Length: 342
Image (cartoon, rainbow, N blue to C red; front, side):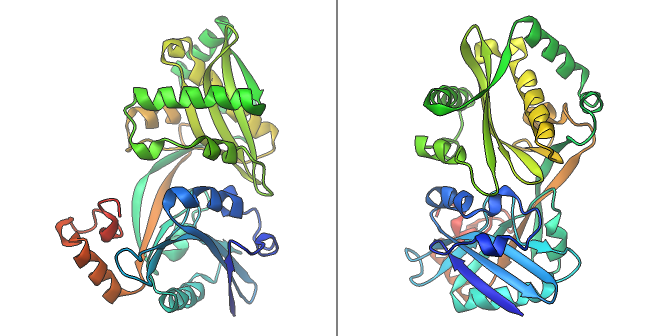
C-alpha cells in the first residue's frame, strides 16, 4: 500500500497513466487554472494497493488568516478520487488519505464528484454526500438521427429556423474568435445579473482553450450575417466532452442560434468518438436552464454529488467560532467557516 503526494512542481503524467480514461479535470493544467480563482495551490495523491489505483487532484486553500498553519482542500470541476478498477480500494484509500490530511493540518475536504463516473457511490461510507443538482448528458454513441430523435419538438423547430435564417456554426481559433466569445460572454452575464464569481479574466478563457494531454478544447461560434451571435467552449477528453461555457446575443436568440449551437457540439463530440457530452445542470433543478439542456436528452440525467468530510474536528470548531458560523443553519454550507466568503 502506498500514497504518493504530488505538488505543482511535480510531473503528474506517469501517475495518471495507470488510471484508465481519466477525465479532463484531473490534469494539472486544469487544476492550476482554477487555483487563483479558488485561492489554492494544486496538489494530488496517487494511491495503489494490490491491483487498485486511485488518482485524486485538489486545491489546498490556506486558512492562515483564521488559524495559522492550517488549510482545507477542495476538488475542481467534476472530479473526486478516480478509482481503477472500480471494485475495491476506496475504504483503504480513505483511511490513509485522512491520516495524511491530519498530518498536514488539512481541516476539511470538499469533493465535487463526477456525475458520469459515479465515483461518489464508492465513498458513501467515508463521508457525507449531498445532492447538488441533476445534470444532463447526451449519449453520442448512437447514430446521429437516433440522437436527434431524443430532441424535443421545440429544439428541432428552432434548428430549422436557424438554418432558414442562414445561421452557420464555425470552429474558431486565434485571438479574433476568442475576443468575439469573451464579448458575448460578458454581455450574457450582464443580461442575467450574474454574480462576480461568473466573471473571468481574459487569461482564464485563454487557459481553457490550451490543449493538454487529457483535453482537446473547441470554441464554436454561431455566425449570422458575418457576426458571432452565440458561442460555446467545449472541452473534449478521452471519453467525455464537456459543455464548459456558453454565451449568446439576446437580439439573435429568436433565430434558434443556441439550439443549432448545441446540436453542433453534439455532432463534434460524436465525430471525436466520445461516449457522452455532459451539458451540466441548471442553477436549480427544474429551472429554465435545466429544461433547455434536458430538451436535448430525455433520459440521460445524472446526479451531481458533493462530498464533505471533517478531518480535524477540534480545529473545525475553532474556525467556526472565529467566523461565528454557528449562525448558519446546520448543513446549509460547508465548510461553515467559509459561509460568508472566507
